[in-house]
Image (cartoon, rainbow, N blue to C red; front, side):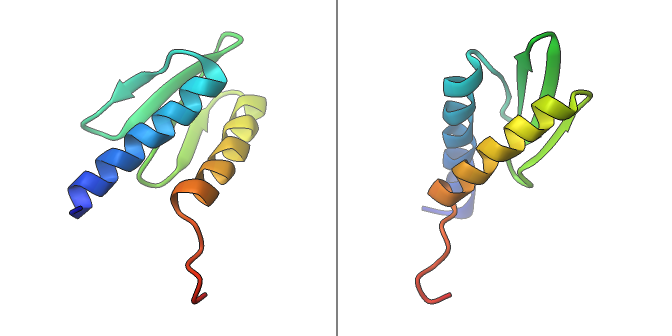
Length: 81
């Protein structure tokens, strides 16, 4: 799997996790960003950097917690570390 395929797979993996938590999400496949909505707030997740932009501190924290769980699944620490 080349780097482009790996990035795409990771993008869709993150989208699946977020959709399971928040329901339907909007995907920006070109920018590899995902928009989620909850309780009238929105957040944009950059799946390359795994960062969150939102006006809601509560939503940002919740997504950061989810991203930490996602990282442990899709970017595990190598055994030789």
